[in-house]
Length: 187
Length: 240
Image (cartoon, rainbow over all chains, first blue to last red; front, top):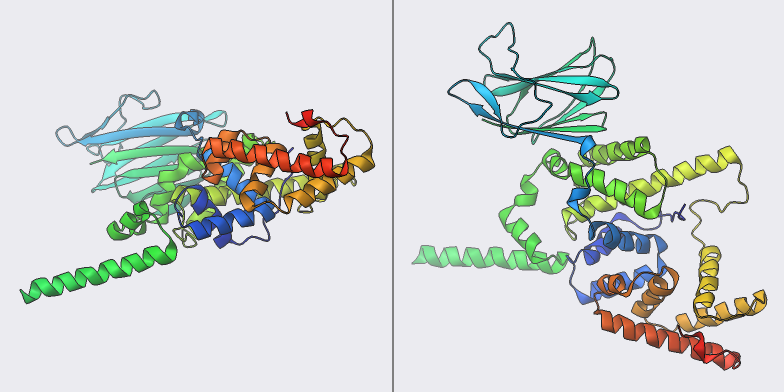
């Protein structure tokens, strides 16, 4: 294992300046020279600076572990009051199951693997907002909801969790921050 | 006419304020545009996080692989969670705007991984009672630099086994190093100790590769001259 250097002595501002030089945002000669001077003395910042070049500059997007991230994209078809997947995905269930109490409400069902089991999502379009029902066999699973304007947490209880009145757009569900489900709904 | 004149004055006033902002914060054109257009400020922490979730996940894994911290998948998930929570909790309020937003996120990830790895190492030391191991967070550079400089002697092909002699050589190197400018000091560290390629060093120091090459040759020459001054018997062929 590599030696781990402490960063206790360098404050947040210094680190941001160091990285500002690294990514080329800071172009002022004087600041650059000050940063180089600091790098000769501070082992932690030197490692931070090196790692930026070795990790971020060499960052290739293809490298994403696709098992961790699921993306779904739907558009809403007003003519037949239903969601249409933009690209086919094996986790989208067909035919779409309606909500019993509201037979005319458009619904999408998604089912995908998580921890040796299956998570089922029911996306419901209701009064220009989205509701998401989540079904999972084990209780206690924490799910975080992220949208452009909302951050919410729900826990599976009685094999269910529910998020309601979500704005259409990009909706992200994080299952214990392990699996990321991105749902983009265009109305 | 007066309205146009007023509008112009107003416009010049805004531009002056912005240029002062640029000068003080030392920001680049893209950030100038962000300031003018308000793209960055308009986004909520949630939006910024959504946009960078894949990036965070990827960078956590990459730093772990690069530095060989040996974090498990579970631990990587834990770090991912902490970084996301931190960004949501404090948001991007500490972001000064003197680097790209991705770079700022990289900094948070980097600090988090190091804190995590340090704590993990601490626990392992307690469990396995490896008393002889170097304490974590100890920033004294003597030990590992000593080892690195001994490696350097091998690179210079100085075939002496006498430890006292080696220590003396390291003293000479240190003394010579202290006379170098900052860039040469960094070149010495990155090329001879970290063994980074010249292309990467050139990128890091904002220099061209031929300049880095020239500087390396000068560094070698100065170190050898300093060693030969005290030990004239050292062969010229030590320059590899």
